[in-house]
Image (cartoon, rainbow, N blue to C red; front, side):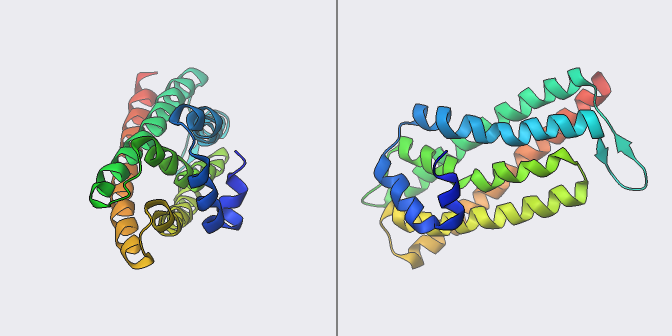
Length: 195
């Protein structure tokens, strides 16, 4: 958790610090990912069960506590899996570099890069569709910036090549995020009708 502030205040130095620490995946998940991924889950649970999704024109959909909890658990599992998948994708994409980082290091890097997306989940406390989309987009842009800053440090490559690598990684990450969001919406809609 001590890297969260640094990722926003001085990301380049923080990425170098993260690289030097050489955290294990287990340590990283228990001290960062599990906590940060809980932020949007808890906020969405409170927002959808207490306030409800506001789709405009007085159209508000509120979930029961049971349905909200059920969907929160699924949403949490999807986010944890998403970080692991992105770590594996970064590791796979780095296969042609001479100083290819380990799979564990790539998963740690993916967890830290996802931090802005996790923190953007705070807006789900007041679940307005347009507000969630706006804040989510800003978080996605900052995640792209963290990739651009971190990849050259992380892979020991120049900035120009790092830009190409981070752009490709971001494109795959956005695709994965869209799949996770689609699954969440489908599960949310299914859960709403089921319970």
